[in-house]
Image (cartoon, rainbow, N blue to C red):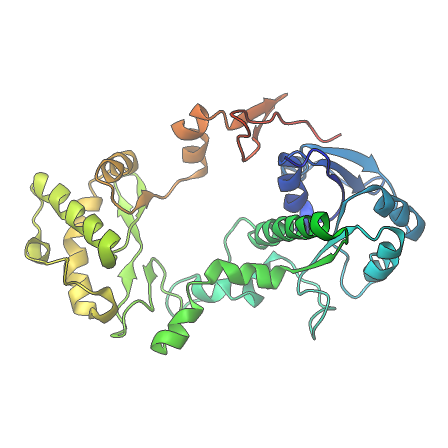
Length: 356
């Protein structure tokens, strides 16, 4: 798909995924690393596969030479340092007017925080994601595996592709200015509308979701099951009605005591006005049912009944997923197993090439 596209990836951790996604789409990506830079981490190997490694100490002259030879240049200059000037777009554009320069920084290249540095922890906090993660009244939490880098890298890849499309129509390159903070905000796009619509600011609620009811009710999202957890929530609307009706039918077939579920008319139920007492009464028998169901049993049953909901997958679950196996997603390179190219193109999944 991008076989004619030449990319120089001069990025650090914030940009590795962007280059990997574009490489998976067929672009020829050269990964620049300084002589002596450590490339032994699993993260580096996973996210820089399908790229050709070149050891090079970058300076202004070498960077200008590279900019003349590529279509997209990916960079993550350290804010507040001379690296920002090194990747000056006006200078590089003068050498290659068609260049798409994709710059990823914690807070973007403009604004009062443009010079601030940040790790995943600070970016997740500044992006608001941590304000919704954790127990009620507890400490804000970040996901154990870094997430900000993935959000920033994915948005950078999309931005680079949009700029590339623009260039094909106009012949002109662009600078794509990616803020990792802004990229993280997209992960909680469901939260801000509650402020405007209901005047409610969603808060940390642990395994529950808030902001769905004007009465302030919280709804359980994560449920203990026989061998882990399930993700399920009582929805409204047409899709929710079908799911709720199918769940009750499933429970009835198992002889579960339904309580208020037995007489609930889902065509009239509206979660936006439900009280906490009503929600608790409906969720209690569901919790008892789910506690006796395995993740595999729930997945099969929910799929067959066309219900919304799915098991919470562990790393081991993903590694053993029969769907991924059937699509040939995993690829072994030497002693390592890697995630394959995310897209199947013309019926084939492109092979991986080790970075080197």
